[in-house]
Image (cartoon, rainbow, N blue to C red):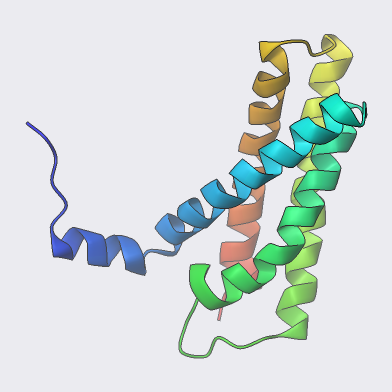
Length: 141
């Protein structure tokens, strides 16, 4: 039996900050991954350095996505305080990502499929950190 999505299910998903965060993050992740791999393979940077650069570049743009879509409310407007807090969360979650990838690189240099595995491990750690801190601290109103 194929699952179906009725209008009520779609409405609830659209209203869920977690679901919106997931959708926005998937889009950002795709771009982040391409930038990371480009820096790793073409600029010959360490994977952890490539991941840090890509993460910060994408994350800086995502304050606006979070403010006006992911965690939107009637009171959503540009906020210097929330942008600064979001950047702080970004730096912390980016550090978590880089630390996980660097630790894995230390254990075994990445090659082939391991590059993507290490990236995915770092993404999982940073994704969780970023969502929890943004949801419950930065965009709490």
